Length: 129
Image 1: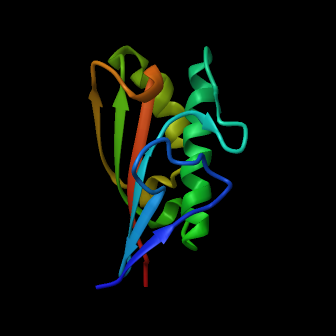
Image 2 (image 1 turned 45 degrees about the vertical axis):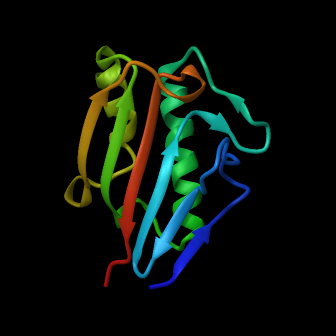
């Protein structure tokens, strides 16, 4: 099994000892993304819809670097600092997936997230025949 590191300048630089994504055979494991703007490395704050869009754009850039789209995503994990934000995040998140191809998912509330953001999303994607 070959472990391929996926990297793009169109997504935020890792802020710790990890990679944006790892591809093993046909499966892509994307690290959790927060609302960090690539290049600028500044955080989108104070507008949950914009924060969620930034997270999804970061994921989209990594998927694209691996020649995948949201149609390839088979599993997502959403971490929220406050479950009361679920409805807003879910609305924005849902715009990125076709209902018939939506992935499996769990959403959990956590006591804190990196850089004290309100959400983080990670995905697993697979090449589809």
